[in-house]
Length: 260
Image 1 (spheres, rainbow, N blue to C red):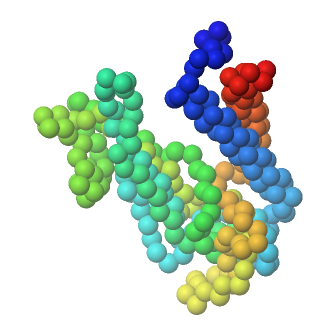
Image 2 (image 1 turned 135 degrees about the vertical axis):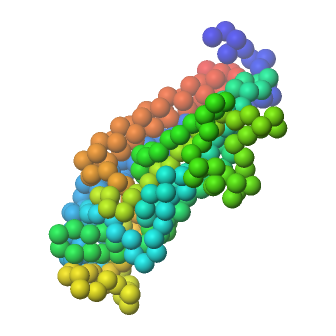
């Protein structure tokens, strides 16, 4: 601890504590936001798809593709949302670890279907939280699946190095598959869809999207109970962790100026 509080420390070390002071504040704010969204989820009653009315709304049901069909890049699953990452394990004099090579996501409009009918979701602008659904690692004697190889070549990437040996790589996907049960919290507005499915009872003319006045728009493939548990633990972690980090850095900064 003597070295930490040495008044002679300057430059990069001092800036380091200032940066982490503000990172702690950002953690604190992120925790508050998580708990605010949690309270909003608790206070918003769940509606059936057919009974969704204009305004804030919460629905839970199966994801059904709207018009387009979409398939994930690696596992080729029929889905309405995917996020993917491609990482390479690299070694250097500064250390070793996973480096990001490629990442991306795509989302398309879909319906939420329950026993009452269906309502459309326009997911642009939504915070989407889903667990990892697919992971594959390639290495010296382990080729990636053909679908991954095709995807890499299409992107101008290769799973081999200059010596034609397999790189150590990791491929991950996060999905909302067609038919998955999905929780949606957003704002419902008028959005008559002329191409809505025929011969289906209870297709709502409203569209759930990101509202102008109520900005919260959240989508997950977990049930509400799990979402609330996760948000509570994450929110408290960020709040108390952020406070601790900021106070620690503030104490060092104040000590540097001789204020404590």
